[in-house]
Length: 191
Image 1 (cartoon, rainbow, N blue to C red):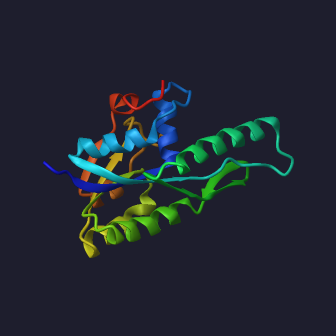
Image 2 (cartoon, helix red, strand yellow; image 1 turned 45 degrees about the vertical axis):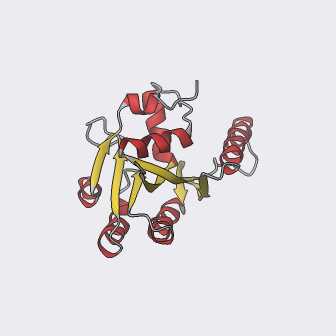
């Protein structure tokens, strides 16, 4: 039996929050490629390509030792990902606003790719790992105008106003909703 191909779109900041939650406060290192393929296989799909969205860590004008170390780790991780033809890394930027770090441009990159890539590659089903309600309009376009099925993977701790509060608006516009379980995540952790 030949499996239908899919594209997997991963919001890196969201994946990072999940890894820290399952790591009990420490970030778990996930094999991103195996993880995306695993999510696709759970839907009886074959992962053709992965799109990973992130932003480099903030660097102040006079970078601290911690900032330099964080950037070096990030660069090493991203360089390794970019060497793999199965994945496209798309980077926004990180901005510090009133002491809070905020990603800029990442949602726009995801939006562009959600519309463009499934059409160009003639994919009928796509997988999205995010929790951001900003994607409701683009998911509506992808589904209604371009007739693509959107499968969303998400995690919830079922607590109001937590980092994992999931918008019913986003869930309502997706064709299929799949809650990530700890076992799904831990099967793809780099030991």
